[in-house]
Length: 381
Image (cartoon, rainbow, N blue to C red; front, top):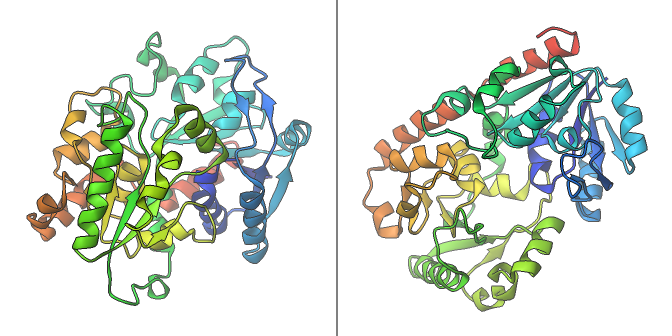
């Protein structure tokens, strides 16, 4: 049995697409249980119920509609039982870094070095067989690019230790736009659409000094979009984890959202539908406004090749904690400070720059991806 863990709301559309499009028989494990780490990386780490009840049920409904095999996992005991039967387990990484390699072989869909610090820490432990797992990265750039340095590693970790591990370089995520039937996803009113990410980044990554600067800049840009006759769609992240974080930090994502109510036309903050509402919106979006640093820029923005406005982005130039894709996008002039900068750019040259950077960081070869799954399931590397 080939298995695939789904436990995070942000991964729902990506992993459902993978399970649906893969020519090999994949069983989706829809996980909604809490369990502290069994490998004691950190007592606070482990699996949590990140899928709320609505996400959980919606995912089940999509699986039934599209004949995707699935198992609902509501306890660690059931998870372990399934792992014993799995010849190949695919995961974004959360269960692997919580419980270690339990399946015959695990393919960790790290993509942009997600969880790499914890994967490396686990690999150095006594008794861990590093031949039982492979780490997938979207391209070789994630190991070789000059801007990578120690990205996603702890300060005390030696990047040379990565040479011990098995890596594969391919991605499925960037092929998702090609799998949509775009004739059914059209801009019926021929509107100019801007998708706005209303989320302040953590202090180490933010382009703002404080929440007030973030909010006033965000609000000012929304006012400009309305003046320019854009349809404004606003997106917040409202997963269980996000809401808990917002309450602790008193972030404006919740506390000041009402102040924006007359400046947007639609809110999209959930993971409903398949393809998701977000992915459908991206196929007809003209512009992304990133209120602050967000993965939406270097993932969906680059994959869908949508121009991006990020105020104060030049503040990120010497920030070593910002991922290398975002830095590459800045260096190739794919990100703009405001609408004026965007209006003044040559759109044909912009499209070519997008192609160049996308091909560098996402190899987009789903056939290679599926071939790797087949080989690993048969015990081949």
